[in-house]
Amino acid sequence: MVRDRQTEDLEECVRLLRDVHEADGYPMNWPADPIRWLSPPGRHLVALRDGAVAGHVVVTAAGELSRLFVDPARRGLGLASLLVSAAERYGARRLEVVDGRVAGFYERLGWTLTGTKRADWDASVHLRCYRKAQ
Image (tube, rainbow, N blue to C red):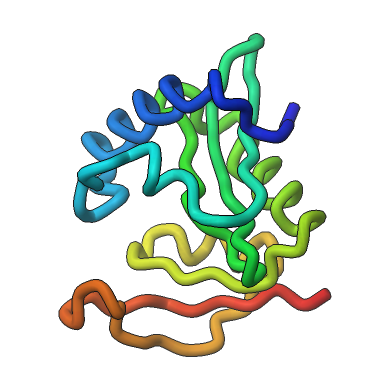
């Protein structure tokens, strides 16, 4: 199940983000204020599994899919796909990824690589840019 993130979900989201960061290096740089990092303007969604927060995504005001992650202990259950589908329903049409390992995931879900660019937050980082047709 996917629902809007509630204020009381934030502590668990930060804990899961820490687990993801330690397991996968996402985000590349641990944010000084993780709650603020998780809360850009937009629609904030969480996936629930067995009544607990198990994943997170944001659809920014600009229609970008952002801040997607799933609890490493609950991967392989389709939660990331569920979150992406929900994000698409709320208007996500763009995304940028650092890690090429996730490219196949987005491509299987119908996202199209449109190019690459350097990250504005670190010029040494190359981003893969994707679009989703409406």
